[in-house]
Length: 311
Ligand SMILES: *[C@@H]1O[C@H](CO)[C@@H](O)[C@H](O)[C@H]1NC(C)=O
Image 1 (cartoon, rainbow, N blue to C red):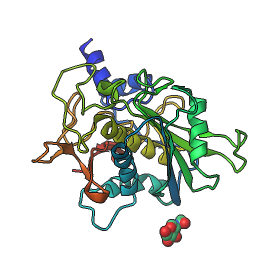
Image 2: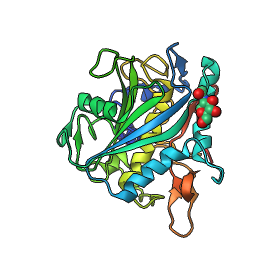
Image 3: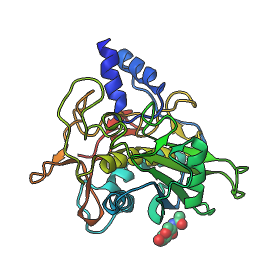
C-alpha cells in the first residue's frame, strides 16, 4: 500500500499514461535497469521550427516564459551553464546510435486563440487540429498546443499532463506526409499537485513544502517541465517507432522514463539537489535565454541506463 502511494506520487510528477506505472514499479522491485530500445523508425532531425498556439487566456508574462524556454533550446551566446541548450544536447546520445543528427529546435510562430474556437473541452482530435493550424506543412515544423488553466482536455489530470502525437498523411489538410505535434496544459488551477509538482504540494504521498518556481508562476513553470518532457519524447519517438521502453501503447520515453527526477539524489517525493536563487528562493536547474531560469526533467541516458541530471 505504501508502495502504491509512493508510486502514485512518483508518477504524479510527469504523467504520461496511467499504465506506465506498473512497469517502472516492477523494475524497481526487481532492480533491473530497463533498456531504452531503438525501434528503427524515424526521429526528428534537422532544423525544426517550433510553432506555438496558445489556446485560451494566457497572460503575456506566461507566454514569454514558454517562448523563452523554446528559444533557449538552441542556445544563446550569453547563457550560463548548466543551460537549457546543454540539457537538450544530452539527447545527442540517442542520435549517435540512429546516425541522424540531433535536431535544432527554433522558436517559430506564436498564434493566439483567446476565443476558445473549439470550446472549453478538447479531445485528442481537437489538439491535432489546433497543432496543424499552428504549424506549416513543411517537414521541419512542429506544432505545439498550450491550453490555458481553464481548458479541460481529454484525460488531462486523469492520466496525463501533456502528450505528443502524430497525424497521418491522410488526415485533414495534410498531404505532405505524417507530422508530429505536442500538447501541454497549464495545470495551475486544475491539478497542480499532479502536473506542477514540485512547485505545488503533491496530490499524494509525503507532504513536503512546494518549491518556489523560477519564473514565479506555478502553471507556466509547471508547463515548462511537461513541455520539456514532451519535446524530448517527440524528438526521439515522433512516430511511435523510435526510442522507448516497454510497450508501444504505453511507452516510457527519454524524459518520462525518469518521472519525478530533477537533480542528483532524487527519490519519490524529493526532486533531487537543485540550484537555489538566494534572493527569490526559487529552485531551478537550467539557465536560458534572457536571463531566465527553468526546472527541467532528468533524461534517461541510453548508454548507461541511468537518469542523467544537469547539475
Ligand atoms: C540549420 O540552419 C543553419 C542556419 O540557421 C544552417 O547552417 C544549417 O545547415 C541548417 N541545418 C540543416 C540540417 O538544414
